[in-house]
Amino acid sequence: MNILEQFIRDIAYKFPKGYPDMKDPNDVELLHKLINENVLAPKKSEINEGGRCRLSLDRKPGGAYLPETNESSFYIEVYPYQVSHFELNAKGFELDIYLDIKLQKNFLSNYKTKAGLHYVMAALSAKEKELDDVFMSDYRGNILETSSCNLFIVSNGVLYTPGLEEGCIAGTMRMQVINLAIQNGIKVYECAILP
Image (tube, rainbow, N blue to C red; front, side, top):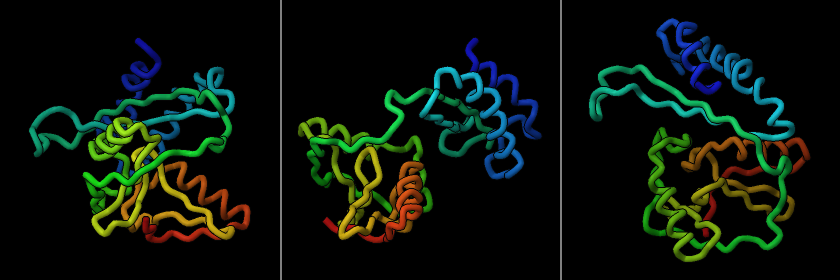
């Protein structure tokens, strides 16, 4: 049994419902604490400068589209980055606009979910065309992001990025870039981006 399996088995009893209820702030805080103590701390020797922690939530089996229960299970992945600093791609990227599927704006748009087939299809299209990535747009033609990352444009010392209300993913790197820009006195505008 690996550390993650042991962790998941050992923590279930600590939550009132037997699983973390992500709508309960106390459960979220406890889950954060348990991840730090039981998953991240033992990995400290492997993750010296930078790494990634991904929490995947799934509903328990039962039912087709209408679940028989609201209980969930989860899986946590932790691994170090090969490079612990950010680098600009010296050669740039070859990109195009993916037109086969348009991104839809709804209350789930800002979340990275397992229903990401449109991103997979876009990435496969980029690979087929021997491109580095493709831009993805909404039904109005606004560019929201690429198949794998958020979009930022720097012009005249100002950072532009699609706003969350446009329907892009609220990525952790997006928030890091916005915060770093603000800390360094760079104006940030969240707005519609046209091709």
